[in-house]
Image (cartoon, rainbow over the protein chains, first blue to last red):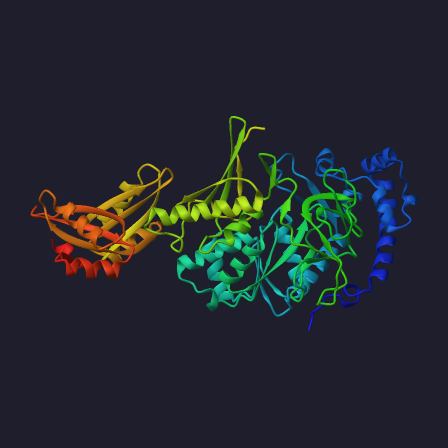
Length: 435
Length: 143
């Protein structure tokens, strides 16, 4: 039987859901137009007034918001309420420029913990669970976002954060953690450390893992499930929209993550033209928040590539599902003119018997030619004392990558543990090209 | 009549071989023979040691990828043509050699040839039938 957090809204017929969405959207656009100068200016330039939003399809009349808009208005320029109503801020790491800052009112925190509790319920978690929260605490939304959701659910939260992997395993053993929240790459780091310590995952109480914050492939999911002896489900979120809890995979459905559409309105666009794509087509995911107070956002371009699935889900939820995010428009590498997503390479590697889920993609430019090499650690399982066998392996992976991507790359075998382990988000690509 | 050989994966980085031999020395493990097979990117170190289990544990604890394979050690007189004679037999018996290396024992009278064959059982049978002495792991260490 499916567990719901808020059954009525989660299973509402779509007609009812869409009328709620429209009311909320109209209210939001009017409020943002009135209170936030940068939004007003952009709407004026586009020649659109709040009154023009008469149906959900009128959303396309509104201009997009991009990361650059957040940077231009750093730190609080896009907040819609006075700072005395803001109870919390979070910020992105700002590795590619100034950090982007988001804020929350008391009601926003309540909304967030609500969608996060909903997400955990999708994964089968209840108040009886002991939840091991290994998302990083701090300015990153992962740790605290999940934390408040776990408390709202009524489960016990272990606020272990990232890092100190051996101690995490001791805690899992002693506290009998039943649910793990982490990035998928950190989950693999945990599994590998357990192996090193001789801890059998079957001896733990872990039942399910809720993984997100970085793109990961289906084959990596299989690997995590096998290595940790758990069910691995996908969670999606981003700080600009709210943080974790925007969408969540259910246990019953075959694929995809339910977007909590009563709060977050999705669109799929062609990343080059900005045009809305027909239902079911793959493109860039765009979100408009419907209920946020301090930092609402209109048509935010997430850069995540996915498609929306409108077919019925076995769990009974009527919220649309987004396919697992397999790439981002900005971690897409263009190698000799071909679009390459790291997750595609990961898919090939994880589909090769015995290959460990630790890899790194190194891109260089020699003269005018891009070269890509994929570094793979040699595990006991793939190691052979014969050169021929190892060379056959690298040639096979090279051929599979070529088949999948149409790009020639070089597979380089490296010694175990030489690729840096993830303490949060894994660094998969080293691009040495000076473009 | 097989001998256990340790194989270690090596990236082509300076100092790796020195590191391995130092770790083995620290554990009092004696290396009887070794060879390195290499390509542009990596190498495989193959070792015959006096304590296979201890060597494997030591190297694994230091983060190396280690495998154990069975090889055949054939003793021949250390004289001109000694190797050629064995290889002729191997050819006549239709045995396929994956790789081989050799060392001379302390007394200097005999050489020991280490072979990895595609078909190990057939090779042992052929070499014994044609009159060669095949050494066990224990015998190699006491040479």
